[in-house]
Length: 317
Ligand SMILES: NC(=O)c1ccc[n+]([C@@H]2O[C@H](COP(=O)([O-])OP(=O)(O)OC[C@H]3O[C@@H](n4cnc5c(N)ncnc54)[C@H](OP(=O)(O)O)[C@@H]3O)[C@@H](O)[C@H]2O)c1
Image (cartoon, rainbow, N blue to C red; front, top):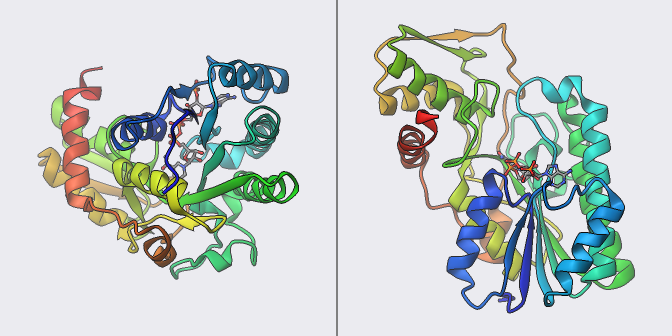
């Protein structure tokens, strides 16, 4: 187990997963020094001098032993299809700047980055890691997916040339407390927001995008954070899938949310709206074998807890 005794940087530390990751690290690695969740307000990682300056100054406070690289520019829904160059430019810039800052200012740190299952090809079978380079990713997230593949290739290059240490985890759609519940968010957060607002406002219908038959994999943010930590501590592979191992149809997700939110009206599926991939599930056998990680939170429990969070916190905003 390679825990941290020095300081930790979490890029994307102000984001959805980053905040839970910081909290879990504090609980699981109590001997750690400073755990800094870096946001774009600390340093715009697309700007190289700013990135270098920030890492130099933070390293001066004490050795950085781990970097968790989560920062990324991504928006759910149809945005990636209309902004592939914007996404490519920002994500490539922040990834290469981060890699170079790591090498220059804290080469002793272990880098653990987070990538996404949109890198895998568009077919209806679970994806093993061996599919990573063999084929092309799904079309509408093509540029974004390649920035993630480029990150893995970059990590490999830096490890090879400068003898650094790194790994990555591939996540499916993550959900849970602190997610965005706006209508154009990832499907889980979007639906939880829609159903809860419909109950509050006494609406009779909730619209669900697509025909409901598309199957996706969802992982609770606490399981994701625990997997990231386990990978940082024990992974020897360059990247590992962290998924539930099975898909759930959007229809089923909508039904669970409907029940848990107490919505009594009609659920209307709209196949004209944005649908995305028809099927996406990871094969996560390697993570079980290599780092002994398994998700613990069922989809029903996870949705119940997320709705409770929404009603308590986000629903009031
Ligand atoms: N959420 C998912 O379902 C999911 C699934 C698979 C993989 N992932 C991956 O997991 C990682 C975290 O996802 P998330 O959902 O937690 O993302 P998020 O909530 O959108 O947070 C993005 C983070 O990146 C930071 N960031 C963006 N541009 C930056 C810049 N130019 N300089 C510095 N920081 C910048 C943001 O900082 P500010 O708050 O200051 O803008 C924020 O902390 C991403 O790499 C994503 O690709 C997520």
